[in-house]
Image 1 (cartoon, helix red, strand yellow):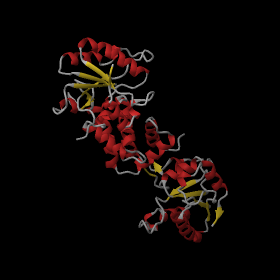
Image 2 (spheres, rainbow over the protein chains, first blue to last red):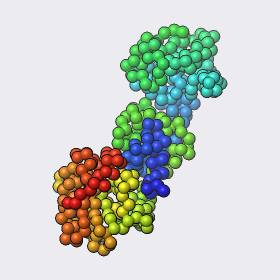
Image 3 (cartoon, rainbow over the protein chains, first blue to last red):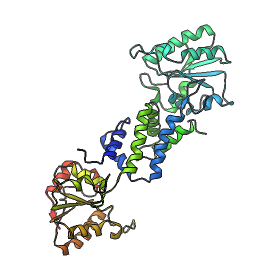
Length: 199
Length: 199
């Protein structure tokens, strides 16, 4: 029998499922939450439900959006001649923070990975090629993880894009090789954007 | 303008209010949560609401409970001759984990602190004295933080309990002095329980 009231134990179990949260941290968070006002708790609870309810993928670029199109696709001030391809939606925000890129994005939704059974048809590659054929995009920057799967996906994309005549570049290897893109700091990522090279 | 959709930004803000969670951790948690199933998210959201809805304080000892009386007060196997006084409900669970105490508890709800404007009447001291006068309790263990406020509260309680003739002890100073009780490990706390001394 747990020493905790059932509902408290349940909350601890739920919190323990979060990344980087162990049993002790989960207990500490639960006790902290218990000591908060009803308003504060329902604020967090509501925010959780709303985010799942409201967030969907932009129909153009597959970035997170609350409407048909994301904030970036709808922004008329963005440069529509240049497109940056990333693997996941949170990488868009990482690149936005560098303040070095003012074009549009395209989120693949993953990387080609035979090991994990992810083939090109599982990603938004067809939609990318369609965009390139039906828009004023003059350059595509491939900003994928500088690891095996990212490089392989970049190579695959470069081969697919070449016949369309769109200039294709990738991030300069200012990004430390062998690590996930999300761990790069803004300055390194900014330098990598400025020093991008043709492939 | 935040680069994040509004509902995502709101979730990040809510997560940032948790202890030990900064902006970067909050973003990471939010993205993790976004990638989870609807079921998983509503599980966490429900657990949060339920804990606030269901958890109340035991009418006898002021520990966390889901009914009138907490699991410990209802447990007929507990030793009703001995009572342990703690400041907060989560300290009950910390002491339970030592497996060295099988009596009952009484949660004060804080410590006497003139600086923070907490006087004896703000705590469940009257209820403690009433319990001692109307039960078979033969010993009271004061398990309060070994810091200024805890020591002062122990002294105050010892003075109040003395006329009732109940034996009063406090945790042995195996507990490292000058730190919060919740940071003590189970073994140290167990030793402190066994080596408790009369005051």
